[in-house]
Length: 269
Image (cartoon, rainbow, N blue to C red; front, side, top):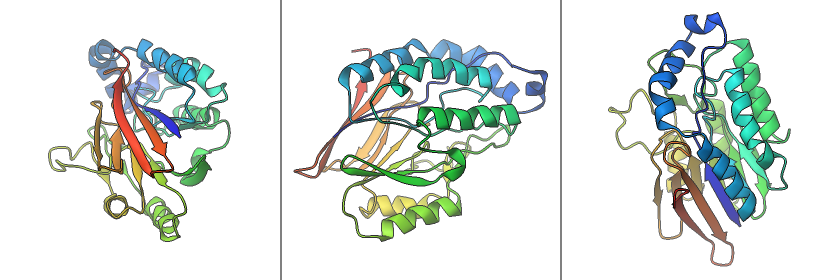
Protein backbone atom coordinates (compact mmCIF):
# COMPACT_ATOMS: atom_id res chain seq x y z
CA UNK A 1 0.00 0.00 0.00
CA UNK A 2 1.42 3.36 -1.04
CA UNK A 3 0.64 6.62 0.82
CA UNK A 4 1.70 10.11 -0.27
CA UNK A 5 1.67 12.60 2.60
CA UNK A 6 2.01 16.39 2.34
CA UNK A 7 1.34 19.37 4.57
CA UNK A 8 1.56 23.12 5.30
CA UNK A 9 0.83 24.83 1.98
CA UNK A 10 -0.08 28.15 3.70
CA UNK A 11 -2.12 29.83 0.96
CA UNK A 12 -2.44 33.44 2.06
CA UNK A 13 -3.77 36.82 1.13
CA UNK A 14 -4.97 40.17 2.50
CA UNK A 15 -7.41 40.76 5.34
CA UNK A 16 -10.84 39.95 3.95
CA UNK A 17 -12.92 42.12 6.31
CA UNK A 18 -12.29 44.90 8.80
CA UNK A 19 -12.90 42.56 11.74
CA UNK A 20 -9.64 40.83 10.83
CA UNK A 21 -7.85 43.79 12.44
CA UNK A 22 -9.62 43.08 15.73
CA UNK A 23 -8.63 39.42 16.07
CA UNK A 24 -5.58 37.24 15.47
CA UNK A 25 -5.90 37.41 11.68
CA UNK A 26 -3.97 40.68 11.51
CA UNK A 27 -0.93 38.82 12.88
CA UNK A 28 -1.22 36.15 10.19
CA UNK A 29 -1.84 38.68 7.40
CA UNK A 30 1.21 40.67 8.48
CA UNK A 31 3.26 37.48 8.71
CA UNK A 32 2.17 36.37 5.25
CA UNK A 33 2.78 39.70 3.51
CA UNK A 34 6.19 40.31 5.01
CA UNK A 35 7.52 36.76 5.34
CA UNK A 36 5.52 33.74 4.17
CA UNK A 37 4.76 34.90 0.62
CA UNK A 38 8.51 35.16 0.01
CA UNK A 39 9.17 31.70 1.50
CA UNK A 40 6.23 29.63 0.22
CA UNK A 41 5.68 28.82 -3.45
CA UNK A 42 2.07 27.74 -3.99
CA UNK A 43 3.00 26.27 -7.38
CA UNK A 44 4.62 23.45 -5.38
CA UNK A 45 1.14 22.47 -4.17
CA UNK A 46 0.03 22.31 -7.82
CA UNK A 47 3.08 20.18 -8.58
CA UNK A 48 2.21 17.89 -5.68
CA UNK A 49 -1.33 17.35 -6.97
CA UNK A 50 0.04 16.52 -10.43
CA UNK A 51 2.57 14.13 -8.89
CA UNK A 52 -0.09 12.35 -6.82
CA UNK A 53 -2.39 12.01 -9.84
CA UNK A 54 0.48 10.56 -11.89
CA UNK A 55 1.67 8.10 -9.21
CA UNK A 56 -1.87 7.06 -8.21
CA UNK A 57 -1.12 5.97 -4.63
CA UNK A 58 -3.59 4.01 -2.55
CA UNK A 59 -4.08 7.07 -0.34
CA UNK A 60 -3.12 10.75 -0.19
CA UNK A 61 -2.96 12.54 3.17
CA UNK A 62 -2.76 16.27 3.92
CA UNK A 63 -2.07 17.14 7.55
CA UNK A 64 -3.26 20.71 7.53
CA UNK A 65 -2.34 24.38 7.28
CA UNK A 66 -3.56 24.78 3.72
CA UNK A 67 -4.20 28.43 4.68
CA UNK A 68 -2.33 31.15 6.56
CA UNK A 69 -5.17 32.71 8.57
CA UNK A 70 -8.17 30.46 7.88
CA UNK A 71 -10.03 33.06 5.84
CA UNK A 72 -12.62 31.94 3.25
CA UNK A 73 -10.64 33.39 0.33
CA UNK A 74 -7.54 31.46 1.37
CA UNK A 75 -9.51 28.22 1.53
CA UNK A 76 -10.94 28.94 -1.94
CA UNK A 77 -7.41 29.42 -3.29
CA UNK A 78 -6.17 26.14 -1.80
CA UNK A 79 -9.27 24.12 -2.67
CA UNK A 80 -9.09 25.21 -6.29
CA UNK A 81 -5.61 23.65 -6.50
CA UNK A 82 -6.61 20.52 -4.57
CA UNK A 83 -9.87 19.98 -6.51
CA UNK A 84 -8.40 17.63 -9.17
CA UNK A 85 -7.10 15.36 -6.38
CA UNK A 86 -10.37 15.55 -4.48
CA UNK A 87 -12.31 14.70 -7.66
CA UNK A 88 -10.03 11.78 -8.55
CA UNK A 89 -10.51 8.15 -7.57
CA UNK A 90 -7.58 8.35 -5.13
CA UNK A 91 -8.70 8.15 -1.47
CA UNK A 92 -7.85 11.43 0.29
CA UNK A 93 -7.73 12.38 3.97
CA UNK A 94 -7.43 16.00 5.12
CA UNK A 95 -7.12 17.22 8.69
CA UNK A 96 -6.93 20.96 9.49
CA UNK A 97 -3.93 22.65 11.10
CA UNK A 98 -3.68 25.53 13.53
CA UNK A 99 -3.63 28.12 10.72
CA UNK A 100 -6.85 26.63 9.32
CA UNK A 101 -8.46 26.97 12.78
CA UNK A 102 -6.97 30.41 13.36
CA UNK A 103 -9.90 32.38 14.81
CA UNK A 104 -13.46 31.94 16.04
CA UNK A 105 -14.98 34.24 13.41
CA UNK A 106 -18.06 32.35 12.08
CA UNK A 107 -17.13 32.85 8.40
CA UNK A 108 -13.67 31.40 9.00
CA UNK A 109 -14.96 28.49 11.09
CA UNK A 110 -17.60 27.65 8.48
CA UNK A 111 -15.02 27.84 5.67
CA UNK A 112 -12.76 25.44 7.57
CA UNK A 113 -15.55 22.96 8.29
CA UNK A 114 -16.72 23.14 4.69
CA UNK A 115 -13.15 22.44 3.49
CA UNK A 116 -12.93 19.38 5.77
CA UNK A 117 -16.18 17.98 4.40
CA UNK A 118 -15.30 18.82 0.79
CA UNK A 119 -11.77 17.40 0.74
CA UNK A 120 -12.82 14.26 2.63
CA UNK A 121 -15.73 13.77 0.20
CA UNK A 122 -18.24 14.05 3.05
CA UNK A 123 -16.81 10.93 4.73
CA UNK A 124 -15.40 12.97 7.61
CA UNK A 125 -17.10 15.84 9.43
CA UNK A 126 -15.04 18.18 11.61
CA UNK A 127 -17.57 18.12 14.45
CA UNK A 128 -17.53 14.30 14.46
CA UNK A 129 -13.77 14.05 15.04
CA UNK A 130 -11.95 12.03 16.23
CA UNK A 131 -12.82 9.14 13.95
CA UNK A 132 -11.33 5.95 12.60
CA UNK A 133 -11.55 4.52 9.10
CA UNK A 134 -9.94 1.56 7.37
CA UNK A 135 -8.43 1.95 3.92
CA UNK A 136 -6.71 -1.04 2.36
CA UNK A 137 -4.74 -2.96 4.98
CA UNK A 138 -4.43 -0.04 7.41
CA UNK A 139 -6.60 1.50 10.13
CA UNK A 140 -6.37 5.30 10.26
CA UNK A 141 -7.13 7.27 13.42
CA UNK A 142 -7.97 10.86 12.47
CA UNK A 143 -7.81 13.48 15.19
CA UNK A 144 -8.10 17.26 15.37
CA UNK A 145 -5.51 19.01 17.55
CA UNK A 146 -6.03 22.57 16.28
CA UNK A 147 -8.06 25.27 18.01
CA UNK A 148 -8.00 29.09 18.04
CA UNK A 149 -5.33 30.37 20.45
CA UNK A 150 -4.01 33.70 21.66
CA UNK A 151 -1.85 36.08 19.61
CA UNK A 152 1.44 34.58 20.76
CA UNK A 153 0.58 30.89 20.60
CA UNK A 154 0.75 28.30 17.83
CA UNK A 155 0.16 25.41 20.22
CA UNK A 156 -2.03 22.41 19.62
CA UNK A 157 -4.10 20.50 22.14
CA UNK A 158 -4.87 16.80 22.21
CA UNK A 159 -7.98 17.16 24.30
CA UNK A 160 -9.08 14.48 26.75
CA UNK A 161 -11.95 13.23 24.61
CA UNK A 162 -9.56 12.73 21.67
CA UNK A 163 -6.87 11.09 23.78
CA UNK A 164 -9.47 8.79 25.38
CA UNK A 165 -10.81 7.88 21.93
CA UNK A 166 -7.32 6.94 20.73
CA UNK A 167 -6.63 4.93 23.88
CA UNK A 168 -9.94 3.11 23.50
CA UNK A 169 -9.17 2.20 19.88
CA UNK A 170 -5.70 1.03 20.88
CA UNK A 171 -7.01 -1.08 23.75
CA UNK A 172 -8.60 -3.53 21.30
CA UNK A 173 -6.68 -6.34 19.66
CA UNK A 174 -4.73 -5.04 16.69
CA UNK A 175 -5.57 -6.93 13.51
CA UNK A 176 -3.82 -4.50 11.16
CA UNK A 177 -1.42 -1.55 11.38
CA UNK A 178 -2.70 1.66 12.97
CA UNK A 179 -1.71 5.06 11.63
CA UNK A 180 -2.48 8.29 13.50
CA UNK A 181 -3.17 11.37 11.37
CA UNK A 182 -2.88 14.75 13.10
CA UNK A 183 -1.31 18.13 12.48
CA UNK A 184 1.26 18.24 15.31
CA UNK A 185 4.24 15.98 16.01
CA UNK A 186 3.88 13.79 19.08
CA UNK A 187 7.65 13.91 19.71
CA UNK A 188 9.01 17.17 21.10
CA UNK A 189 12.76 17.29 21.72
CA UNK A 190 12.80 20.93 22.89
CA UNK A 191 9.58 21.47 24.86
CA UNK A 192 10.83 24.65 26.55
CA UNK A 193 12.27 26.24 23.43
CA UNK A 194 9.13 25.37 21.48
CA UNK A 195 6.65 26.10 24.25
CA UNK A 196 4.60 28.35 21.91
CA UNK A 197 4.49 25.73 19.13
CA UNK A 198 4.17 22.33 20.80
CA UNK A 199 1.31 19.87 21.21
CA UNK A 200 -0.10 19.63 24.73
CA UNK A 201 -1.73 16.51 26.18
CA UNK A 202 0.11 14.11 23.90
CA UNK A 203 2.08 12.04 26.43
CA UNK A 204 -0.25 9.05 26.71
CA UNK A 205 -0.66 8.84 22.94
CA UNK A 206 3.09 9.17 22.44
CA UNK A 207 3.53 6.20 24.76
CA UNK A 208 1.08 4.22 22.61
CA UNK A 209 3.29 4.98 19.62
CA UNK A 210 6.43 3.97 21.51
CA UNK A 211 4.74 0.75 22.70
CA UNK A 212 3.65 -0.24 19.19
CA UNK A 213 -0.08 0.21 19.81
CA UNK A 214 0.14 2.88 17.10
CA UNK A 215 2.47 1.98 14.25
CA UNK A 216 2.95 5.33 12.57
CA UNK A 217 2.14 8.98 13.18
CA UNK A 218 1.79 11.32 10.18
CA UNK A 219 2.00 15.03 10.92
CA UNK A 220 3.01 18.46 9.68
CA UNK A 221 3.35 21.81 11.50
CA UNK A 222 7.17 21.73 11.48
CA UNK A 223 8.15 23.05 8.05
CA UNK A 224 11.36 21.10 7.65
CA UNK A 225 10.76 17.42 6.88
CA UNK A 226 11.97 14.89 9.42
CA UNK A 227 11.26 11.37 10.58
CA UNK A 228 11.81 9.23 13.66
CA UNK A 229 11.30 5.66 12.54
CA UNK A 230 12.85 2.32 13.45
CA UNK A 231 14.08 -0.46 11.18
CA UNK A 232 10.50 -1.65 10.60
CA UNK A 233 9.31 1.83 9.66
CA UNK A 234 7.46 2.41 12.93
CA UNK A 235 7.50 5.90 14.42
CA UNK A 236 6.64 9.38 13.22
CA UNK A 237 6.97 11.18 9.89
CA UNK A 238 6.68 14.94 9.53
CA UNK A 239 6.16 15.80 5.85
CA UNK A 240 7.46 19.36 6.22
CA UNK A 241 6.02 22.23 4.20
CA UNK A 242 5.18 21.34 0.62
CA UNK A 243 5.38 24.98 -0.48
CA UNK A 244 8.44 26.06 1.50
CA UNK A 245 10.65 23.01 0.99
CA UNK A 246 8.86 21.19 -1.86
CA UNK A 247 8.79 18.23 0.51
CA UNK A 248 6.40 15.30 0.68
CA UNK A 249 6.58 11.93 2.40
CA UNK A 250 6.17 8.63 0.58
CA UNK A 251 5.21 5.60 2.64
CA UNK A 252 5.00 2.05 1.27
CA UNK A 253 3.54 -0.65 3.48
CA UNK A 254 4.67 -4.18 2.69
CA UNK A 255 1.99 -6.38 4.24
CA UNK A 256 3.95 -9.59 3.66
CA UNK A 257 6.93 -8.35 5.67
CA UNK A 258 4.81 -6.04 7.86
CA UNK A 259 7.24 -3.19 7.21
CA UNK A 260 6.70 0.49 6.40
CA UNK A 261 9.26 1.89 3.96
CA UNK A 262 9.25 5.64 4.51
CA UNK A 263 11.12 8.48 2.85
CA UNK A 264 10.98 12.26 2.72
CA UNK A 265 11.01 13.24 -0.95
CA UNK A 266 11.74 16.60 -2.60
CA UNK A 267 9.69 17.61 -5.63
CA UNK A 268 12.59 19.83 -6.73
CA UNK A 269 14.60 16.76 -7.74
